[in-house]
Image 1 (cartoon, rainbow, N blue to C red):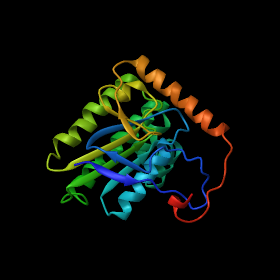
Image 2: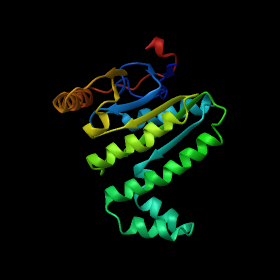
Image 3: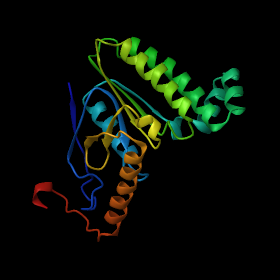
Image 4: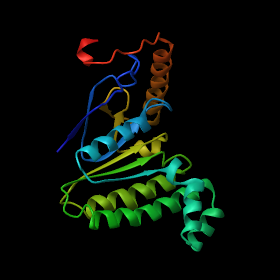
Length: 222
């Protein structure tokens, strides 16, 4: 079963909106948001989270920039997790991300067995997790976390939405054009590379246009 979300806009937001559609439809399984930095991947994930909260659909999210790095180290120290803190302190960026995701995997399992046990639809959202990961780390993440989630929860519609900057995360997955709200397919790295460079042109051209504040009221009256 697919899920459609209406994209929300602030009343006084500029006419120049980052997305070309007002509704985005997602399919169960892994969806990888693609596009250049600043195209709206993280903003779209927040939009999804807001809609899930309103519709009371269970979800769990992990933002590597917010939940990882020094934040995860500080939490480990605060809660007295000496082994985890020591591991994070001595790890490279990529190793620390792997450690944090492994820790989050346990929380996902508890979430699926607890809060989301009786739910027929569940969302798991990852933001910026592939930045700093090597190819083998990404392959391991997809094989040992994503695949296991689907295999052990076949009675549910599971949506895993990931923002990505690395082609390896996109390889073999359903990719989603963040700006235009459509699924796209990349058979080669060169196709992915051209797509990202084109999205950068779209972003730059959008920012060059004169920006006019939207009037408050019904958007159909604009």
